[in-house]
Length: 206
Image (cartoon, rainbow, N blue to C red; front, side, top):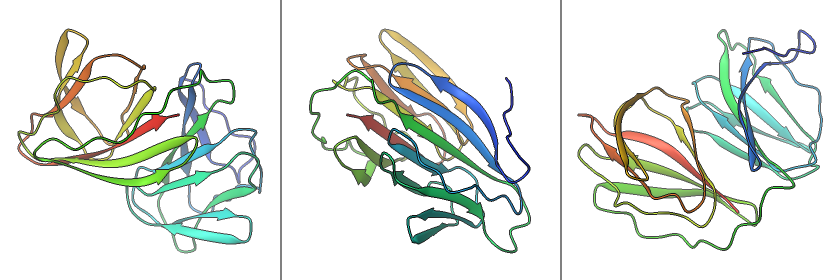
């Protein structure tokens, strides 16, 4: 996979996934990395996937992140920049998720109740996307279900999962930062096959 880096101050960018709905790019910010202020003609979700001190500047405000699973939503054409903060000595990884402007429209999909052993916390919910942090206790499982919208999941903590896709069931060892795209109307379910809890982000694209 090709790496793209425009100048020494920019993060290293590695494309992960692209389709008609989203483009997902892995970003690595070394110590002292500082983006120039820029905009995009589409909404952007930024997710911190390793720990470390990083700041996301939007207009005249900078919001700091330190932990895995920090999320920033950047609206279309909003000026922003990401930088590693002072005294940060190791690289920090992020995912940038572009919601493509010509993505197929999706009908409304209201939030549902969580099954036993699964807890959900909504982090972002607007006209473009809903981002939910989901925790699976050991032995917990979703019923097979589908969504009228495309869904992206980002694994935050490593775990052994049972993943049902259509009629196929797989057991997968997933590392932190693992990206999984689920097209709309596909029957699916996740289950925790591990001895410890795990967390992921569920991103419903509107």
